[in-house]
Image (cartoon, rainbow, N blue to C red):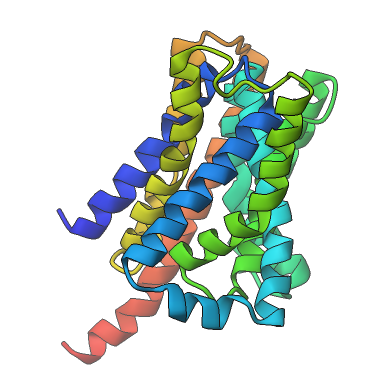
Length: 298
């Protein structure tokens, strides 16, 4: 098996098992967990930049006005995504969180159509309509919008949209993002400590270690993914990405025994059908493009 595929699988499996980690920190306020995640991620990434001799190149590119403006927008979006996710896992909404990452690719496509004026092939509209119908149906079932899933899906889709124009690679981009958030995160943790609400070094040793480990847990799959992306086709990445929400869904259902009714199963089933149709259509369209080229070499 290619190295790239192994890197991608490893990244998505780690992301898929994230609920195990963040659920153990459910007793720590989500904003503190997020702040520790930012703090230790930046320190680790900054160390990697220094050790690999990339500091001068990073500094020359990262501190330009246009670059900083792009990443100021991206940090707001990723902070919303991380905070929502950490809170949702701690509050027992693992299944709904997985829904957000199931529908994320379709939301990204929708944003491409609306904001970038991208054109869809006729059959691609069917999965989008099915996913929209599923959200409406789940809204009726829940009695309110599945806001956790929608917040995760839209924040990450907009984040991906912004990153399309981002000039830095994954390592340097995440270093700059966490660097921008470093001071606010540090000040918040200092304030939490000052008012006597800080969890770090005031809870069990395991809690403190896990807060420090949040940096490693955050950066490892991102670095694996950045290593996989140049080596693996977008089609393969698109298929493998569903490892993450599938594992999260299974954890929520069979490990944490979150309630999951037949009505919810129908709603999720519609989303899964939409994703299958979208994937099949993409594969068939790709084959139609390659067949003429292959015929020319026969």
